[in-house]
Amino acid sequence: MLSVAFTGHRPNKLNGYNRSDNFKLIRVIRFEIERLYNLGYREFISGMALGVDQWAAEEVIDFRDTHPDVRLVAAIPCLGQESMWRPYSQREYRSILDRADEIVQVTNKPYEHKCMQVRNEYMVDRANVILAVWDGTYGGTANCYNYAKKMMKEVIIINPNQLPNILGIKTQLRADKISNMESLANQYPIIKEIDSYPYLQFLESKTIEELLEIKETKNRQAHFNSQEAMRTGDSLRSSTGTRLFKEVHLITRFINLIKEQNESKEG
Image (cartoon, rainbow, N blue to C red):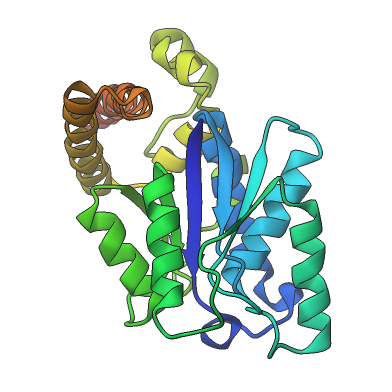
């Protein structure tokens, strides 16, 4: 089963503790959950910290109501993680745990400084993709990101200070990009194979330079996973490599189509 792990900032580095004050960020997280689901991901892992971890977990639970094959895994870093939180936050935490499909107690010790990184490494090792809400600053999210890159895991970064216009991505097609998703799907059947209209909309929001960078990263990860699958016989690595090669192929076609459209406009 393909898995996604969440990592991200606490509320004090975002817009505070209220979900309503972080609505735009949460909407972007939900968009990514739906996009990754359409790419075949079914398991979502939350470290259950305040902020991004719990908001993402709640979005997974809500999404699961209409997609019952989705699983939420709660990875608990230490005993009594919530003991020093406000009563309301403790209730929210326990409510999420009650609705999780699996609870993993990563360490059986009270809080100590390194337990959060132990939890992060467990999630990264278990997941295929890491979804990180990270502004690039030093901290626990940065440590998780660095470990994920060390382990050659794919990392999707949402910068909370540069959030994309998801409504615009979903409802508007920029003039310099694709104008008809249906005709593109008919032209390139691989799009239907990946079930990727939301993924196309994500690609559509990128410049050619950004697409080339995404393609290079995914191609490198695809080769790494395929080589590891051949070395270890790991079927999960094999399926991840195959999916990544499909994405590389799709991105290549997408870039070529944009170039063709730009050339026709110039002509």
